Length: 106
Image 1 (spheres, rainbow, N blue to C red):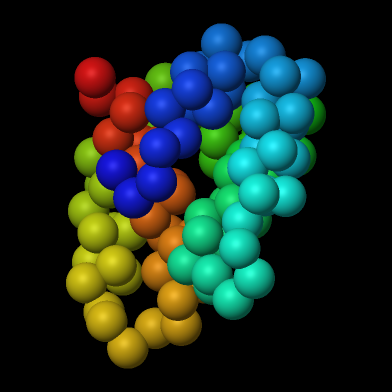
Image 2: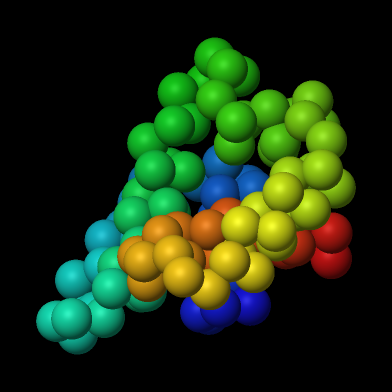
């Protein structure tokens, strides 16, 4: 995993959105200035929480409901991560998604 977000991923899987939001807010506020990778990572986590609207339409909900092929997403995101020239915040964003998807396979 890129950063230690295992607790957050468990909260998200259990759809405990209140605690997941609290976790990511605390994580985001503790980041040092200038750490673009971690800020991108945190933004992805915030987006995951915000996307969970209970209608099953968002990517994260489709993943948790088993309606989205995780293997193809892992492959696609892994390919983007391997492109080293991308900005650090984008790398962190993709790493958060990859970490989330990999946490589902455990």
